[in-house]
Image 1 (cartoon, each protein chain N blue to C red):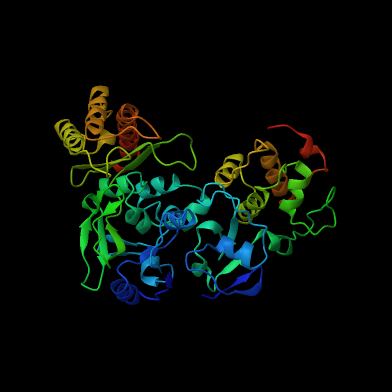
Image 2 (spheres, rainbow over the protein chains, first blue to last red):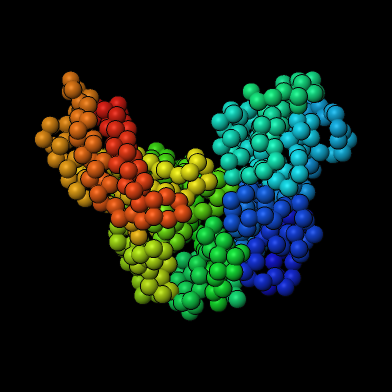
Length: 183
Length: 296
């Protein structure tokens, strides 16, 4: 069957889609968007997290046909949507056109092998859109479905706090937060 | 494999009639796992996410009609006041991503003994409304699950909605898992107090082939409350606390209603113990809710 949907603002069409395949497969294998990662295929790990019609979902659990005419945003399109005025990007990656959450992940050292990173970034960006200044409990709750086997999560929490602080216009000097241990 | 996309409940019913072997799919949180792992290859998937009649909830004649396609996220954000027990159970489901997709109807359709909302539906006496070419049926939630992952639906019959009263009193839900997030219940327990009807409702999850009530525990507690005059205005009573012995007995009777097994998530002995603890705890929470908010 043919599936067409809006992905990162662009109307895309995939042909010869099998009725039982997932949105994740369509994105990665048919539309050339491998940013969303394929790991558990059962909604446990969050590495395939994308935004569909405004809410985050595991793309591995959305049947391809269910995405017909839906609005999808993947990690590839995040930077284009997320420019926060006065967010003050600096440090490594500067000028690379990163979303503030991506920039915060770079600066906080929240990326090790990087496999879980796209899902975490999409989920964290979604959290900060809904709750601009989340508590630690809210951050942990929001990221509960995104597994990371490298970092131990502390740097990821640091990154979300950093992005939130910048978003709230309370940006601190670069490097300070990145070097701090668990709070 | 075909992908069927009805746009109305009438069309969904007609399609389900023509394709009785089609597997209904809503949030995909169970069906797509089976698809991804090659465990299921149905001749067709029947996508219910574009059926507007399933998507919302409404109140009519004092009864709530919650569409089968209502997600856990919606139960939490929109129905936490009217159906606190269901919202509590929904908060324990998976992750935010899963709660954004998974639906109440899907929880019933999968009919897992561990379905998180099911003990709450039993405790509150909910009724499942179905739709098929032969008409609509109303099945008590307590009779809906007929075995492990088996339900009372006939071929071509769909879950349309769940009918239930707004919480008539305090509701509580307890769940034990290996961690706090993303877990399938090792055991769960729901309780509801209905002061106007002098009724206690219970529901046990993950400790029998199907969710089930604990009638002996319900009758025991209703009798205790009636005997001590505690149903009436407990906030005005000098000693409105429940006796520790009565709490213990309620827990014992709740655990005795279960028929747990040893499996990868826990042993039967652990589940029995956990149920007694959870029943006691959930009742204490519900009772304090009653004293604080419902009694005056």
